[in-house]
Image (cartoon, rainbow, N blue to C red; front, side, top):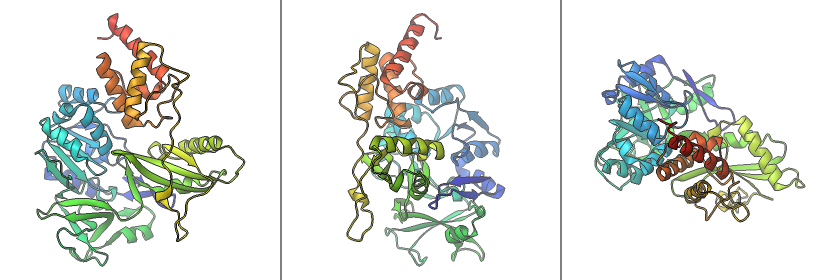
Length: 440
Protein backbone atom coordinates (compact mmCIF):
# COMPACT_ATOMS: atom_id res chain seq x y z
CA UNK A 1 0.00 0.00 0.00
CA UNK A 2 0.91 3.66 -0.26
CA UNK A 3 -0.01 5.76 2.78
CA UNK A 4 0.31 9.53 2.65
CA UNK A 5 1.75 11.57 5.50
CA UNK A 6 2.17 15.29 5.94
CA UNK A 7 4.97 17.02 4.00
CA UNK A 8 6.83 20.28 4.71
CA UNK A 9 6.54 21.44 1.07
CA UNK A 10 2.75 21.50 1.22
CA UNK A 11 2.47 18.25 -0.76
CA UNK A 12 1.82 15.02 1.21
CA UNK A 13 4.42 12.31 0.69
CA UNK A 14 3.38 8.73 -0.04
CA UNK A 15 5.14 5.98 1.95
CA UNK A 16 5.39 2.79 -0.15
CA UNK A 17 5.04 -0.27 2.11
CA UNK A 18 5.51 -3.74 0.61
CA UNK A 19 3.77 -7.06 1.22
CA UNK A 20 7.05 -8.26 2.72
CA UNK A 21 7.03 -5.37 5.24
CA UNK A 22 3.49 -6.18 6.37
CA UNK A 23 4.14 -9.93 6.58
CA UNK A 24 7.29 -9.37 8.65
CA UNK A 25 5.41 -6.98 10.93
CA UNK A 26 2.50 -9.38 11.44
CA UNK A 27 4.84 -12.30 12.20
CA UNK A 28 6.26 -10.66 15.34
CA UNK A 29 5.99 -12.72 18.53
CA UNK A 30 4.46 -9.71 20.31
CA UNK A 31 1.16 -10.39 18.55
CA UNK A 32 0.59 -13.78 20.17
CA UNK A 33 -2.74 -13.36 21.94
CA UNK A 34 -4.02 -10.69 19.50
CA UNK A 35 -6.52 -13.15 18.03
CA UNK A 36 -9.57 -10.83 18.12
CA UNK A 37 -8.51 -7.27 17.28
CA UNK A 38 -10.83 -4.25 17.29
CA UNK A 39 -10.75 -2.33 13.97
CA UNK A 40 -11.79 1.29 14.58
CA UNK A 41 -9.08 3.37 12.88
CA UNK A 42 -9.47 5.06 9.51
CA UNK A 43 -7.81 3.09 6.70
CA UNK A 44 -5.66 6.16 5.93
CA UNK A 45 -4.08 5.83 9.40
CA UNK A 46 -1.35 3.21 9.72
CA UNK A 47 -2.84 1.76 12.91
CA UNK A 48 -5.24 0.02 10.52
CA UNK A 49 -2.30 -2.15 9.37
CA UNK A 50 -2.13 -3.64 12.86
CA UNK A 51 -5.91 -3.89 13.19
CA UNK A 52 -6.38 -5.80 9.91
CA UNK A 53 -3.24 -7.77 9.12
CA UNK A 54 -2.05 -8.86 12.56
CA UNK A 55 -5.21 -10.93 13.20
CA UNK A 56 -5.86 -12.00 9.59
CA UNK A 57 -2.32 -13.20 8.84
CA UNK A 58 -2.27 -15.17 12.10
CA UNK A 59 -5.63 -16.91 11.73
CA UNK A 60 -7.46 -14.48 13.98
CA UNK A 61 -10.56 -12.29 13.69
CA UNK A 62 -11.11 -8.61 12.92
CA UNK A 63 -13.90 -7.18 15.08
CA UNK A 64 -15.27 -4.12 13.26
CA UNK A 65 -16.21 -1.31 15.66
CA UNK A 66 -19.54 0.50 15.25
CA UNK A 67 -19.47 3.83 13.35
CA UNK A 68 -18.45 7.01 15.18
CA UNK A 69 -15.79 7.83 17.77
CA UNK A 70 -14.77 4.99 20.07
CA UNK A 71 -15.96 5.73 23.61
CA UNK A 72 -15.91 3.72 26.83
CA UNK A 73 -19.34 2.03 26.41
CA UNK A 74 -18.53 0.95 22.85
CA UNK A 75 -15.17 -0.46 23.95
CA UNK A 76 -16.72 -2.22 26.94
CA UNK A 77 -19.34 -3.87 24.71
CA UNK A 78 -16.65 -4.98 22.26
CA UNK A 79 -14.62 -6.61 25.04
CA UNK A 80 -17.62 -8.21 26.74
CA UNK A 81 -19.74 -9.27 23.77
CA UNK A 82 -17.15 -9.76 21.02
CA UNK A 83 -14.33 -11.01 23.32
CA UNK A 84 -11.89 -8.47 21.84
CA UNK A 85 -8.35 -9.28 22.94
CA UNK A 86 -6.32 -6.55 21.19
CA UNK A 87 -6.91 -2.79 20.91
CA UNK A 88 -4.72 0.11 19.79
CA UNK A 89 -5.58 3.67 20.87
CA UNK A 90 -3.89 6.93 19.97
CA UNK A 91 -2.37 8.64 23.00
CA UNK A 92 -5.03 11.34 23.13
CA UNK A 93 -7.91 8.85 23.05
CA UNK A 94 -6.15 6.59 25.53
CA UNK A 95 -5.72 9.51 27.96
CA UNK A 96 -9.38 10.49 27.66
CA UNK A 97 -10.65 6.94 28.25
CA UNK A 98 -8.14 6.36 31.06
CA UNK A 99 -9.54 9.36 32.90
CA UNK A 100 -13.16 8.34 32.31
CA UNK A 101 -13.09 4.54 32.64
CA UNK A 102 -9.69 3.02 33.52
CA UNK A 103 -11.38 -0.28 34.42
CA UNK A 104 -12.70 -0.63 30.86
CA UNK A 105 -9.18 -0.26 29.46
CA UNK A 106 -7.82 -2.62 32.11
CA UNK A 107 -10.20 -5.31 30.83
CA UNK A 108 -8.46 -5.39 27.42
CA UNK A 109 -5.92 -8.27 27.48
CA UNK A 110 -3.59 -6.65 24.92
CA UNK A 111 -3.93 -2.87 25.19
CA UNK A 112 -1.63 -0.70 23.07
CA UNK A 113 -1.30 3.07 22.95
CA UNK A 114 0.98 5.30 20.88
CA UNK A 115 1.32 8.17 18.44
CA UNK A 116 2.59 10.70 20.99
CA UNK A 117 4.59 10.66 24.22
CA UNK A 118 2.72 8.53 26.75
CA UNK A 119 1.16 10.17 29.81
CA UNK A 120 2.63 8.51 32.93
CA UNK A 121 -0.49 9.45 34.94
CA UNK A 122 -2.89 7.89 32.41
CA UNK A 123 -0.81 4.71 32.12
CA UNK A 124 -0.54 4.42 35.89
CA UNK A 125 -4.32 4.85 36.25
CA UNK A 126 -4.97 1.85 33.99
CA UNK A 127 -2.28 -0.29 35.62
CA UNK A 128 -3.68 0.45 39.09
CA UNK A 129 -7.06 -0.74 37.78
CA UNK A 130 -5.45 -4.10 37.03
CA UNK A 131 -4.46 -3.63 33.41
CA UNK A 132 -1.27 -3.88 31.36
CA UNK A 133 -0.35 -1.12 28.89
CA UNK A 134 1.95 -1.50 25.89
CA UNK A 135 3.52 1.74 24.68
CA UNK A 136 4.09 1.38 20.93
CA UNK A 137 6.39 3.54 18.82
CA UNK A 138 6.89 3.60 15.06
CA UNK A 139 6.70 5.97 12.07
CA UNK A 140 4.67 5.04 8.98
CA UNK A 141 8.01 4.43 7.24
CA UNK A 142 8.65 1.46 9.56
CA UNK A 143 5.24 -0.23 9.08
CA UNK A 144 3.29 1.00 12.10
CA UNK A 145 5.41 -0.20 15.05
CA UNK A 146 9.16 -0.55 15.48
CA UNK A 147 9.65 -0.42 19.27
CA UNK A 148 7.47 -1.25 22.27
CA UNK A 149 7.51 -1.17 26.05
CA UNK A 150 5.20 -3.12 28.38
CA UNK A 151 4.02 -1.48 31.62
CA UNK A 152 2.63 -3.91 34.20
CA UNK A 153 3.66 -2.18 37.44
CA UNK A 154 2.47 1.28 38.57
CA UNK A 155 5.06 4.04 38.16
CA UNK A 156 4.83 7.81 37.85
CA UNK A 157 8.09 8.11 35.88
CA UNK A 158 8.30 8.72 32.11
CA UNK A 159 7.16 5.76 30.01
CA UNK A 160 9.95 4.51 27.69
CA UNK A 161 9.31 3.67 24.03
CA UNK A 162 11.20 0.44 24.72
CA UNK A 163 13.19 -1.85 22.49
CA UNK A 164 12.86 -3.10 18.89
CA UNK A 165 10.40 -5.68 17.61
CA UNK A 166 11.53 -8.89 15.89
CA UNK A 167 13.61 -8.38 12.74
CA UNK A 168 14.10 -4.72 13.69
CA UNK A 169 17.24 -2.89 14.81
CA UNK A 170 17.39 0.52 16.52
CA UNK A 171 20.44 2.80 16.68
CA UNK A 172 20.97 6.01 18.65
CA UNK A 173 23.48 8.05 16.65
CA UNK A 174 25.10 11.48 16.58
CA UNK A 175 25.28 13.79 13.56
CA UNK A 176 28.17 11.72 12.16
CA UNK A 177 26.23 8.45 12.47
CA UNK A 178 28.32 7.32 15.44
CA UNK A 179 26.65 5.53 18.39
CA UNK A 180 26.24 7.78 21.44
CA UNK A 181 26.87 6.50 24.98
CA UNK A 182 24.07 5.25 27.20
CA UNK A 183 22.12 8.16 28.70
CA UNK A 184 23.20 10.65 26.01
CA UNK A 185 20.50 11.95 23.60
CA UNK A 186 20.91 11.11 19.93
CA UNK A 187 18.77 10.66 16.83
CA UNK A 188 16.94 7.36 16.45
CA UNK A 189 17.59 5.33 13.29
CA UNK A 190 15.63 2.15 12.53
CA UNK A 191 16.66 -0.74 10.28
CA UNK A 192 15.28 -4.18 9.53
CA UNK A 193 12.50 -6.05 7.75
CA UNK A 194 9.80 -3.46 8.55
CA UNK A 195 11.51 -0.67 6.61
CA UNK A 196 9.36 0.70 3.77
CA UNK A 197 10.58 0.88 0.18
CA UNK A 198 10.65 4.69 0.30
CA UNK A 199 8.55 7.65 -0.85
CA UNK A 200 6.52 7.16 -4.01
CA UNK A 201 8.00 9.19 -6.87
CA UNK A 202 10.36 11.05 -4.49
CA UNK A 203 13.89 9.61 -4.95
CA UNK A 204 15.41 12.79 -3.48
CA UNK A 205 13.43 12.56 -0.25
CA UNK A 206 13.91 8.78 -0.09
CA UNK A 207 17.69 9.21 -0.30
CA UNK A 208 17.56 11.86 2.44
CA UNK A 209 15.58 9.80 4.97
CA UNK A 210 16.45 6.19 4.02
CA UNK A 211 20.23 6.15 4.34
CA UNK A 212 22.87 3.43 4.08
CA UNK A 213 23.27 1.46 7.31
CA UNK A 214 26.93 1.23 8.38
CA UNK A 215 26.11 -1.42 11.00
CA UNK A 216 24.31 -4.02 8.87
CA UNK A 217 24.96 -6.22 5.87
CA UNK A 218 26.19 -4.47 2.71
CA UNK A 219 23.31 -2.78 0.89
CA UNK A 220 21.03 -2.50 3.93
CA UNK A 221 19.36 0.78 4.83
CA UNK A 222 18.12 2.53 7.94
CA UNK A 223 15.42 5.17 8.39
CA UNK A 224 16.24 8.51 9.98
CA UNK A 225 13.25 9.15 12.25
CA UNK A 226 14.02 12.73 13.31
CA UNK A 227 13.22 11.72 16.90
CA UNK A 228 15.71 12.36 19.69
CA UNK A 229 15.97 9.53 22.23
CA UNK A 230 18.31 8.28 24.93
CA UNK A 231 19.12 4.68 25.74
CA UNK A 232 18.66 3.70 29.38
CA UNK A 233 20.90 1.35 31.32
CA UNK A 234 18.45 -1.53 30.76
CA UNK A 235 18.60 -1.02 26.99
CA UNK A 236 15.17 0.58 26.58
CA UNK A 237 14.80 3.91 24.78
CA UNK A 238 13.29 7.09 26.19
CA UNK A 239 11.77 9.72 23.88
CA UNK A 240 13.36 13.17 24.27
CA UNK A 241 11.85 15.31 21.48
CA UNK A 242 11.87 16.12 17.77
CA UNK A 243 14.90 17.18 15.77
CA UNK A 244 12.74 18.99 13.19
CA UNK A 245 9.42 20.85 12.94
CA UNK A 246 7.12 17.82 12.90
CA UNK A 247 4.48 17.54 15.60
CA UNK A 248 1.91 14.91 16.51
CA UNK A 249 -1.73 15.77 17.10
CA UNK A 250 -4.07 12.96 18.17
CA UNK A 251 -1.67 10.39 16.77
CA UNK A 252 -1.23 12.00 13.35
CA UNK A 253 2.24 13.17 12.35
CA UNK A 254 1.96 16.68 10.93
CA UNK A 255 4.37 19.00 9.16
CA UNK A 256 3.34 22.50 10.24
CA UNK A 257 4.83 23.77 6.98
CA UNK A 258 2.21 21.87 4.99
CA UNK A 259 -0.62 23.69 6.80
CA UNK A 260 1.16 27.03 6.36
CA UNK A 261 1.74 26.42 2.65
CA UNK A 262 -1.89 25.44 2.07
CA UNK A 263 -3.47 28.32 4.01
CA UNK A 264 -1.07 30.86 2.49
CA UNK A 265 -2.90 30.29 -0.80
CA UNK A 266 -5.95 32.10 0.60
CA UNK A 267 -6.05 35.52 -1.12
CA UNK A 268 -6.66 37.39 2.14
CA UNK A 269 -3.54 36.05 3.89
CA UNK A 270 -0.23 37.90 3.58
CA UNK A 271 1.71 35.92 6.23
CA UNK A 272 0.92 32.87 8.30
CA UNK A 273 2.53 30.84 11.08
CA UNK A 274 1.06 27.67 12.55
CA UNK A 275 2.01 26.39 16.00
CA UNK A 276 1.09 23.37 18.08
CA UNK A 277 0.33 24.95 21.47
CA UNK A 278 -0.16 23.19 24.76
CA UNK A 279 -1.44 25.91 27.06
CA UNK A 280 -3.01 23.28 29.31
CA UNK A 281 -1.25 19.99 30.18
CA UNK A 282 -2.26 17.19 27.81
CA UNK A 283 -4.33 19.51 25.57
CA UNK A 284 -2.30 20.11 22.39
CA UNK A 285 -3.98 22.24 19.72
CA UNK A 286 -3.03 23.76 16.37
CA UNK A 287 -3.23 27.56 16.23
CA UNK A 288 -2.85 29.63 13.05
CA UNK A 289 -1.56 33.22 13.26
CA UNK A 290 -2.57 35.36 10.26
CA UNK A 291 -1.41 38.73 8.93
CA UNK A 292 -4.05 40.04 6.50
CA UNK A 293 -3.13 41.18 3.02
CA UNK A 294 -6.05 43.61 3.01
CA UNK A 295 -5.85 45.64 6.24
CA UNK A 296 -9.36 47.01 5.71
CA UNK A 297 -10.93 43.55 6.11
CA UNK A 298 -12.48 42.90 9.56
CA UNK A 299 -10.55 40.38 11.70
CA UNK A 300 -13.57 38.17 12.26
CA UNK A 301 -14.23 38.00 8.53
CA UNK A 302 -10.67 36.89 7.71
CA UNK A 303 -10.44 34.30 10.49
CA UNK A 304 -13.81 32.86 9.51
CA UNK A 305 -12.93 32.80 5.81
CA UNK A 306 -9.59 31.08 6.41
CA UNK A 307 -11.22 28.56 8.76
CA UNK A 308 -13.73 27.61 6.07
CA UNK A 309 -10.91 27.44 3.50
CA UNK A 310 -8.95 25.13 5.84
CA UNK A 311 -11.97 22.87 6.35
CA UNK A 312 -12.40 22.57 2.58
CA UNK A 313 -8.73 21.92 1.73
CA UNK A 314 -7.16 20.10 4.70
CA UNK A 315 -7.94 16.86 6.54
CA UNK A 316 -9.94 17.47 9.71
CA UNK A 317 -7.01 16.66 12.02
CA UNK A 318 -4.90 19.37 10.31
CA UNK A 319 -7.45 22.18 10.64
CA UNK A 320 -6.27 24.62 13.35
CA UNK A 321 -8.50 24.98 16.40
CA UNK A 322 -8.03 28.76 16.43
CA UNK A 323 -7.20 31.49 13.90
CA UNK A 324 -5.58 34.59 15.40
CA UNK A 325 -5.33 37.74 13.25
CA UNK A 326 -2.31 39.98 13.97
CA UNK A 327 -1.15 43.30 12.51
CA UNK A 328 2.36 41.82 12.18
CA UNK A 329 4.24 38.72 13.27
CA UNK A 330 6.68 39.31 16.18
CA UNK A 331 10.35 39.10 15.20
CA UNK A 332 13.47 38.32 17.24
CA UNK A 333 16.77 40.19 17.01
CA UNK A 334 17.78 38.04 14.00
CA UNK A 335 14.70 39.12 12.08
CA UNK A 336 13.07 35.68 12.32
CA UNK A 337 9.56 35.04 13.60
CA UNK A 338 9.65 34.88 17.40
CA UNK A 339 7.32 31.93 17.95
CA UNK A 340 7.58 32.24 21.73
CA UNK A 341 6.13 35.76 21.52
CA UNK A 342 2.98 34.71 19.67
CA UNK A 343 -0.02 35.22 21.98
CA UNK A 344 -2.26 32.48 23.30
CA UNK A 345 -5.56 32.35 21.41
CA UNK A 346 -8.66 33.88 22.92
CA UNK A 347 -11.49 31.45 22.37
CA UNK A 348 -14.98 32.55 21.43
CA UNK A 349 -16.51 34.54 24.29
CA UNK A 350 -19.37 32.59 25.89
CA UNK A 351 -22.78 34.26 25.63
CA UNK A 352 -23.73 33.16 29.15
CA UNK A 353 -24.76 36.62 30.33
CA UNK A 354 -27.64 36.95 27.85
CA UNK A 355 -28.48 33.31 27.16
CA UNK A 356 -28.62 31.48 30.46
CA UNK A 357 -29.85 27.86 30.73
CA UNK A 358 -33.62 27.60 31.15
CA UNK A 359 -34.25 23.88 31.77
CA UNK A 360 -32.60 21.30 33.99
CA UNK A 361 -31.14 19.56 30.94
CA UNK A 362 -29.67 22.83 29.63
CA UNK A 363 -28.26 23.57 33.07
CA UNK A 364 -26.62 20.12 33.22
CA UNK A 365 -25.09 20.38 29.74
CA UNK A 366 -23.87 23.94 30.37
CA UNK A 367 -22.19 22.91 33.63
CA UNK A 368 -20.47 19.95 31.95
CA UNK A 369 -19.24 22.14 29.07
CA UNK A 370 -17.90 24.75 31.47
CA UNK A 371 -16.03 22.08 33.44
CA UNK A 372 -14.54 20.36 30.40
CA UNK A 373 -13.60 23.59 28.60
CA UNK A 374 -12.30 25.32 31.74
CA UNK A 375 -14.81 28.19 31.54
CA UNK A 376 -16.75 29.89 34.31
CA UNK A 377 -20.09 29.49 32.48
CA UNK A 378 -21.52 29.05 28.98
CA UNK A 379 -24.73 30.11 27.27
CA UNK A 380 -27.37 27.95 25.62
CA UNK A 381 -26.50 29.12 22.08
CA UNK A 382 -22.71 28.75 22.41
CA UNK A 383 -20.99 26.39 19.97
CA UNK A 384 -18.88 23.69 21.65
CA UNK A 385 -16.17 23.76 18.99
CA UNK A 386 -16.21 27.56 18.77
CA UNK A 387 -15.35 27.63 22.47
CA UNK A 388 -12.27 25.47 21.86
CA UNK A 389 -13.76 21.98 21.98
CA UNK A 390 -12.38 19.05 20.00
CA UNK A 391 -13.15 15.37 19.46
CA UNK A 392 -11.37 14.19 22.62
CA UNK A 393 -13.13 16.79 24.76
CA UNK A 394 -16.41 15.71 23.15
CA UNK A 395 -15.80 12.20 24.51
CA UNK A 396 -15.40 13.68 28.00
CA UNK A 397 -18.63 15.67 27.62
CA UNK A 398 -20.59 12.58 26.58
CA UNK A 399 -19.11 10.59 29.46
CA UNK A 400 -19.98 13.21 32.10
CA UNK A 401 -23.53 13.71 30.82
CA UNK A 402 -23.92 9.94 30.63
CA UNK A 403 -22.84 9.56 34.25
CA UNK A 404 -25.21 12.33 35.40
CA UNK A 405 -28.39 10.96 33.78
CA UNK A 406 -27.45 7.25 33.94
CA UNK A 407 -28.26 6.84 30.27
CA UNK A 408 -26.02 6.25 27.27
CA UNK A 409 -25.40 9.49 25.37
CA UNK A 410 -23.62 8.85 22.02
CA UNK A 411 -20.49 10.91 21.35
CA UNK A 412 -21.85 11.76 17.89
CA UNK A 413 -24.59 13.77 19.60
CA UNK A 414 -22.01 16.42 20.53
CA UNK A 415 -20.98 16.74 16.87
CA UNK A 416 -24.49 16.80 15.43
CA UNK A 417 -25.92 19.04 18.21
CA UNK A 418 -22.97 21.34 19.09
CA UNK A 419 -24.91 23.92 21.15
CA UNK A 420 -26.10 23.60 24.73
CA UNK A 421 -29.72 24.02 23.64
CA UNK A 422 -29.63 21.33 20.95
CA UNK A 423 -27.67 18.81 23.02
CA UNK A 424 -30.01 19.36 25.98
CA UNK A 425 -33.00 18.70 23.71
CA UNK A 426 -31.38 15.41 22.67
CA UNK A 427 -30.77 14.43 26.30
CA UNK A 428 -34.39 15.20 27.21
CA UNK A 429 -35.68 13.17 24.24
CA UNK A 430 -33.57 10.16 25.28
CA UNK A 431 -34.78 10.44 28.88
CA UNK A 432 -38.44 10.56 27.79
CA UNK A 433 -37.91 7.56 25.52
CA UNK A 434 -36.27 5.68 28.39
CA UNK A 435 -39.14 6.48 30.79
CA UNK A 436 -41.69 5.32 28.22
CA UNK A 437 -39.82 2.06 27.77
CA UNK A 438 -38.82 2.74 24.18
CA UNK A 439 -35.13 2.12 24.89
CA UNK A 440 -34.33 -1.54 25.72
